[in-house]
Image (cartoon, rainbow, N blue to C red; front, side, top):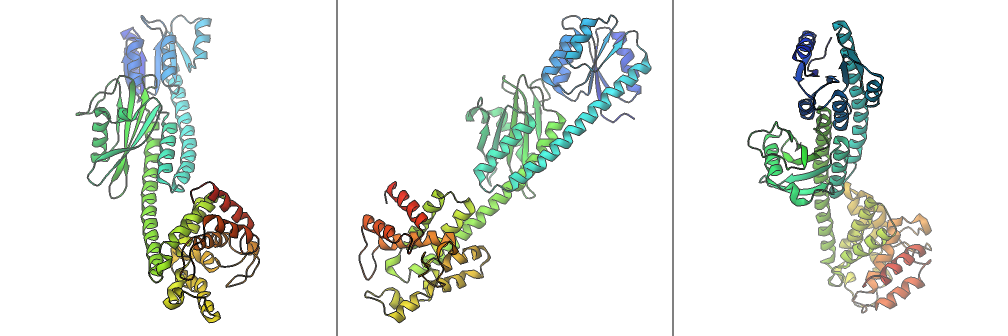
Length: 481
């Protein structure tokens, strides 16, 4: 049983041969197109959707072996059957090198033709299914990579990289649409194509059409140009444009091109990129949602920090500065991005517990009494309690709770020591102490930068983690302060 849609190209300069093969293959259920020479045949191949070529060897202008060579240059997956009334050993060897499927010797046995055509079509179908299965496995892996990428710039780069690889394209561009439908170039790939190449009228017209219709467009350099669009640039042989559809809107457009030597995009290429674009659309929406949540998260944290600092005129900006120092240390230590985020936000929130401490104690210009100091010492545990019930703040609880622990075990509230103190809390301890020393307080003026660095060195291994002190001092020596 012939699968629907299988199309065979017959190439022969003898009309009677073309008639014979066309009538027979049409009765067998195949779609048939015919060409009287190799040049005309190539135009059909370049337009795509040819599943098998049956070509004579002896033809004027371009013989069958030369046609086979050109087909292989454009699309190695199309099977080719050679027909000849005068087979030679040299011709057979040359054809086999180029991957000819089989020979048909004139005069034809129609039963023999049917068997060889079916065998070639079945083999191509199996190869395509195997390739498709392999691609689907790869697409599953790619989908996982895209879904786990939370940086928008990195996601754009990976999406384009995978798109070019799967479609075997020479260049790619990613456009995003704003609320008014205006398209902006977000990322591109392909050293031969500058940004202004992608914003030419040819591509922008097609991209806007795709954005509005939510349907892809495929164009080859030799025709099938949808109405209202412009011809491709001279150097481009094929172009496809895909919408990045979400349930509520079209996020943008993916454009892919091949040069003149690349041939058209196949239906398999289009199917793969369609799947990839669908997955990318989901990932892009998720990353945007993540960043919206993250921004609201950050605003919430800053609001908490400002509420604390409003009680103490001397600590205005303290939490922001501590956050800055914790990020410098964490990045210099090579911590993963999500852990850097945690110490960053913990830096903003580390003193949130002071909201429960009397302003008279916080702003006291003289030395604190033991009772007053005990009140101050409650703020890490109080801060941890305040944020513990907020789901997105919960990972910060150990950092806020233990940022006043000493490396030698003489700190508070739990008397932890060494590496029993969470790493983020040890980083906070160093950053918090340095920021406090270099800032004015009601009971003293700020210390010079050099003096504060000497205190850190003196307390290394006592109050502070020696490794973190060493890293922070290195960072300070290479920055302005």
